[in-house]
Amino acid sequence: MRFAGFPRETVLFLKGLKANNSKQWFDAHRADYDAFFVAPALALIEALAPAAQKLDPPLQAAAKMNGSLRRIYRDTRFSRDKTPYNTHMHLIFWAGDHPNRSSGIHLVLGADGFGYGAGHWAFEADALTRYRHAVLDDRKRKALEESLAIAGKAGCSLDAPHLKTVPRGFDKGAAGADYLRYKGIVARTMDGRRDFDPRLFTGECVDYCSGLMKAMAPLVGWVRSEVELA
Image 1 (tube, rainbow, N blue to C red):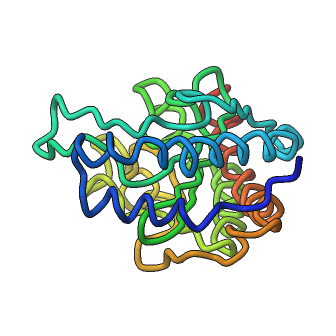
Image 2 (tube, rainbow, N blue to C red):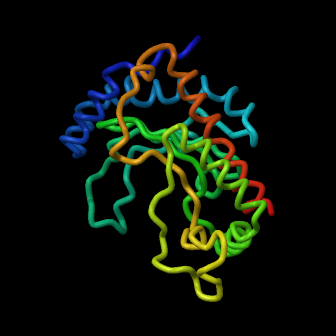
């Protein structure tokens, strides 16, 4: 069955949760969570799976909680913010062996808009070393910038650099030095640019999301080939 788009009740549920982020409110609206959050999220993941597999690199899509659908429950153990729930729906399609440890594409439907992005948030030590050498290589850096330009046409851009200066041992005047200030590489929509595209609520949703994923796939491919598998 073709995915017909998100019901408007999905946004109403998220707005209600944002205004009443408590277990009492959530328990009272558990049926809405199941009907308007979980059910359409899993249906969209299943509908996007064939398109995800056709990308380069192929991306995994698992229509289950803790697969492509992130849990709505927040981990508050090390956070000052003790509100129990995320007020957005977070879908992930990934290229490696684990959704949290490899590059991928993220689609996020929130109370106030829809956002998306791609890349790898934070590289582990060995991968970070490979990334830094890759961005100093003219050919590899050009390929990265080409992938960022494609994602940019879909509305994605890099965050501010994670480091104030170029890491010790690297030439701050070298071509590509600005990329050395990143601990991971992610291009995504910024909060100020988020809105609700009307196609999200119609039968065009799958084609719309597939198009966004196609635009972000080259960045995932670059990270996968030059960092994760290098």
